[in-house]
Image 1 (cartoon, rainbow, N blue to C red):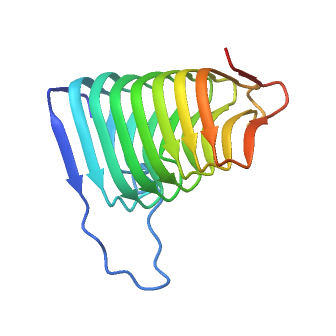
Image 2 (image 1 turned 90 degrees about the vertical axis):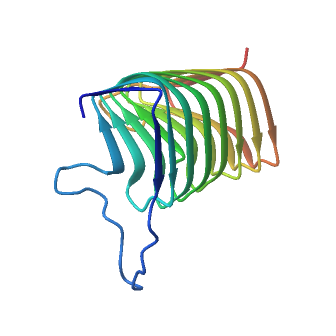
Image 3 (image 1 turned 180 degrees about the vertical axis):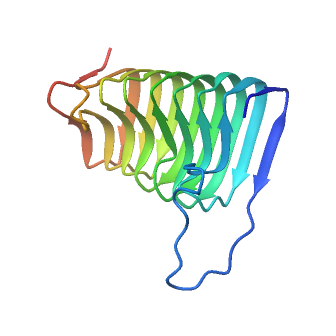
Length: 209
C-alpha cells in the first residue's frame, strides 16, 4: 500500500495446494481483502503484473490506485483473475487464460485498455459496473459465458471487438437497485459461434456505431 511502482515487474507463481475433497478457497481474509495480491493506493508507471494459479476470490485486486500498467498476464485463476475498484488505470496489454469466474472485473472508476485477449472465462470476459467509465481499443474474447458486460450506470466504449464461442457477446443491464441502466457502445465487432448476440436490460443501451 501507498507505493509508487515505476518500471517494476511483479511476478507471482502460487504454490498448488494439496486439497482435500471438501476444502474451499478463502474469499475474504482477516483484513477484509479478497486478493491473493492486493495493491492499495498504488501509483503505477509502466509496470507489469504476471500471476498464475491464484486460489483466492481475486488473483490480483487493485484498489484506490492510478497510473499506467504496461502488461497484465494471468493464468489459471480459481475465481476472478483481475479485479480493480475505485481507481483510474490505463493498461496497455492484458492476456488472461482460464478463469473460473470473471477474467476482468472493474468498478467505481475510470479505465482504459489498449489490447485485451481473454480465453476461457467461465462467467464474464470483462465486467464493468458501479458507475465506471471504460475505453477499450481492441478486444479478442473467446470461450466465455458473456463477452463484455456493462452494468449499473456504467459507460463502455469499444473501438474493435472480436468474439468467438460465446453464449452472449454483449450485455448491458441494471443489477443493483441503487444504480440505473448502463451503456455499451461498440464501433466494430465480429461475433461468431454464438447463441445470443446481445442481452439488453431495461433502461440500458447497446450501440453499434
